[in-house]
Length: 79
Length: 245
Image 1 (cartoon, rainbow over the protein chains, first blue to last red):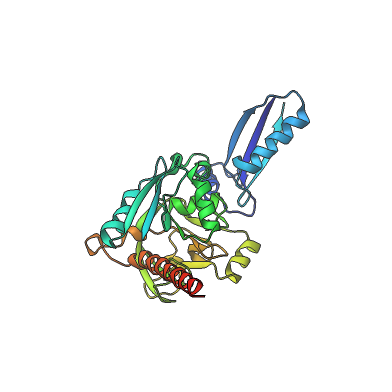
Image 2 (tube, chains in turn blue, green):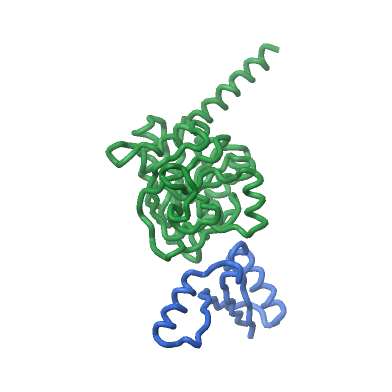
């Protein structure tokens, strides 16, 4: 199965890159883009065919390595 | 005494640290490759600046998997003095040897300049030769030195007096304009709860010679010499007492 892991800074942590991108979009005339959060995206190929197992494994590696729990949170999609 | 300087692929301040330890303050120094599994009997471990493992994923994130880090952790657990400078500080954070994390600099720029630091605590092996309130002028060079800790963690760090160095103005006053990267509470250097592990973003090893613009960084290296010599002396006295019994 494949798991997709999206890592972003926690809402409570200021994201200077996201802010700068939002400002750039505003200067391009996209005032409707209210805010931007920049993050990281990982695709994991997993040796399992069971979605719950895939999800649990992806969460474990996200906790251990892909995200830094002090500043980042993550979201997982499995298919 | 002997300094051990850990070399990761991508370290680039290892030679500066080696030079400062060996040629400037006249101590023994030894490089330790990150794949080594032996600290070669050194008295102090320095994790130098640079871009260990290319800073892949996050700064310092991959270095904690280097084999030598198991030995560094065991050395720290035994009370051995460990100093992380710049990227070394980031490695200590990712390895969980110090609390918190680094973010991109406020303003997103790589900052390379001299800054002023105030010594906040002198009961660490890397500041014991200094004075509380002493202001040091030391260079920085980093893009991710914006120290962050969530509020509860920050409260604990402050309550435990773990903030060792803060960015200040030249006269030692807290001033947001003197904070080069947006670090919370102007934190430039930090120790662990047992105070033997210290991380700092500024580079004391680059401020040890007048020729290079100043000698304020020497107090960090001289402190650890004093700390190691004192603990060796104490060990000798204790051994003498023991055998006299």
